[in-house]
Amino acid sequence: MEEGTIEQIKRTVLISNRVITEERMEETEFPIICYQPERFAGKLYPVAWMDPIIELNKSINRIYTSLEDRVYTFSKGRFLAKRNENISNISDDNGQMVYYDNVPPAYLQQ
Image 1: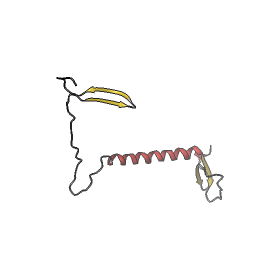
Image 2: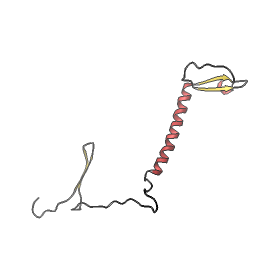
Image 3: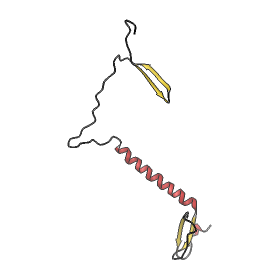
Image 4: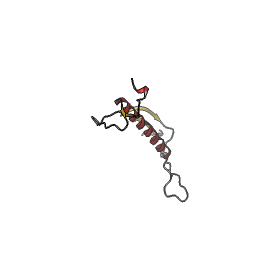
């Protein structure tokens, strides 16, 4: 380093080994910050910061799984079957089985 020049910190942001930004900071020394997570009286560990997001993610997963099951079932089709009839499954890839008592539902007879 030359005499009379001030050392500065240079911040470089890389994504996939590609330089996104490169800038010189005004600080001449690294800022040291002491990290201390929250402490609650009577608890050994604090509540995780991700805790509310985990519940939201579980709800989204349930909705997505339900929709996926519905699409899978309805894409296989519907089968009409009279109740108490002995029907053997041809394969295990059946769609929706609709059971009726006397007359099949009109909206399904197309």
